[in-house]
Length: 66
Image (cartoon, rainbow, N blue to C red):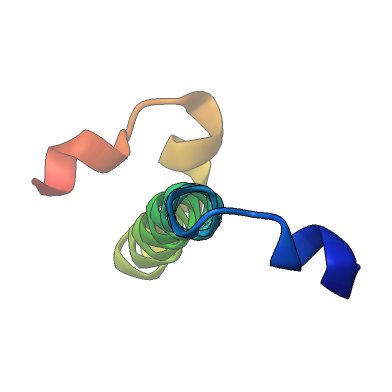
């Protein structure tokens, strides 16, 4: 492992590092989107808890609260 790192040029090391950072950033953005979707769903259920029957029939939609 160390011998392969020693043969890499500084440019190769730089590219490999930033490629991994890019992958991490994409994963973080996906996680943020998933969390916001989950929070929206929870908020929807809190706001329309009293209208459970309407929710089940599809008469109330989360976009109504926006």
